[in-house]
Image (cartoon, rainbow, N blue to C red; front, side, top):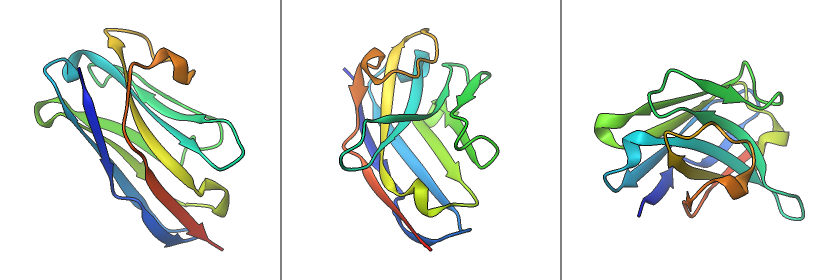
Length: 125
């Protein structure tokens, strides 16, 4: 089992930055692919970024590429999402997700095994 707790969300003006954190419990964190997703009411959950178990491989959606950076610190069981140049359309609840051990970086939410409770990010114009 892996438990995930996100933090770092909040209200920010367009052009600003936020750093989301996802703290994980469980001994298998360091071997799992991790992902960030986001969702707004009435829309499907959207893949944002993913990182392989070693941290060497990352993947981003086209909408955030060049603005967001995903990273992980396996010794601290934490994954981060640095969000720069935020836009109002980035407003959403952001979720951290843990994939299968040594698995690929899926962009489909159903391929992830564990989810956090989410943290709200609101970008004002």
